[in-house]
Image 1: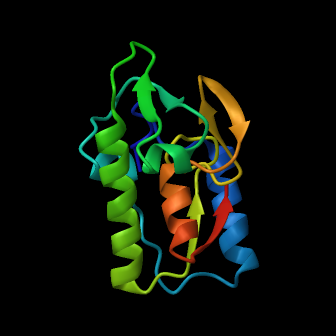
Image 2: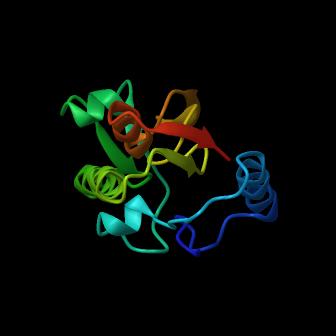
Length: 138
């Protein structure tokens, strides 16, 4: 799926990590490919972006924002996409998600704050965790 900010697909090592996680889980009855940033209306390719503030949770509370390297505020698109991911998971009864690490949307254990990798989830990961999903990063 070519939805990374730079218009590329996940690298081979990320694909291998996804495959290993699925194999560990015994396969998946249904795999749902979803890009919250595209679902939120952001283009592909798009400029790199990061959380400006303390955390994804703060952004979701209106106490931070997501900006590009040119300081363009893309918070609304990131929030719309995170909400769409949460709503789709609820609609389909999804209880587990495998997300791409380090993204300001999908980072599970690390995200991009102020342009640097920082411990903590991205916006979509935070909303999915809040909704009770089990997350794994790849």
